[in-house]
Amino acid sequence: MIGRRSDVDQLVLQLSNGAHRVVAAPRRTGKSSVCEAAVGRLRAKRFYTVSISLFKYTNAATLAEAIAQETLANRRPMHKLIEKVREAGATVVKGAALTLAMKTQADLGDAVELAIR
Ligand SMILES: Nc1ncnc2c1ncn2[C@@H]1O[C@H](COP(=O)(O)OP(=O)(O)OP(=O)(O)O)[C@@H](O)[C@H]1O
Ligand SMILES: [Mg+2]
Image (cartoon, rainbow, N blue to C red):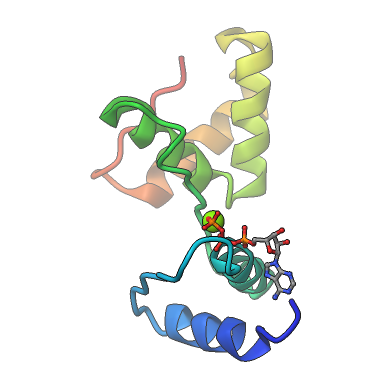
C-alpha cells in the first residue's frame, strides 16, 4: 500500500466509529486496494465485515442471499455449517450442528428467519 497508509487509517477510524463512507476517485487509482486493506484491518480487529460486488448479482434475491451469507461467514462455526449443508444436504443438520443453528437463530432474534434447505 505505497503512499496510502493515511487513507487506510482514516477509513478504518471512520468505519469503526459507525460512519458510512463512499470512496470515489478516477479509475485505477487504488480505491479497491484501499478499501480491501481497511476491511482487512477491521476484520483483524474483530469487526463483522461484508464485501459484495454489485457487478456479480443480477437481482435482489441473489444480492440478499450473498449479503446474508457474507454476514453469517463472520461467525466461523456458522460458516462451516452452511458449507457442510451445501455439500451434504440437509440430513447432516442434527446434533451439534442443529444446536448451533438454533443458537444462531436465538442470537439473531425474531427479525431474522434462518432457513437451511
Ligand atoms: N498504493 C498503491 N501503490 C502501488 N500500486 C497500487 C496501489 N494501489 C493500487 N495499486 C495497483 O493499481 C492497480 C489498480 O488498483 P485498484 O484496483 O485498487 O484501483 P481501483 O481504483 O479500485 O480501480 P477500478 O477503477 O478499476 O475499480 C492494481 O494493479 C493495484 O495493485
Ligand atoms: Mg476497484
